[in-house]
Image (cartoon, rainbow, N blue to C red; front, side, top):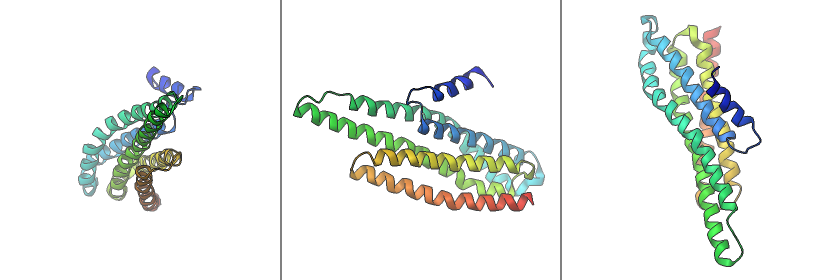
Length: 205
């Protein structure tokens, strides 16, 4: 394990509120992409897994970019939370300052909800491709495929919690719309992960 990786873990485990759960969700997605890439490449390496070549190529195209997006989202989530905290620190000594502060808090909170929603969307796209790789990919890497799927699902779940806590912090129509979209992704992801778990169990037996 290199020093950079350990440094990230140390940052997460510090007493600072950032990086927190949203960042971890994005990093979890990055790990899911990495494992999916490995399984896809192992599938492409042999004609024996020819039925899985199309989805493997699709996943490689997606996950090579999604890895980079995941890391950008990890930083964006921490930055979004810091903006919320900065908004709450604005002065509120008179009516005008209070209005400015309230608008800043709402804007920052919407940003803090949208970032984990982006993590959810990105994770869902990956998860939606994994059933076919589970069915037709290299069976020698089936546990790695299962791990990639569980990580993608976990990233969705963690990110959805971060959406909810921001939405619940204030009553706003735009925030409520974000919650609806997040809930839909989470609900659909539960169907996908159950499907993948069944396929994995069948192939491992």
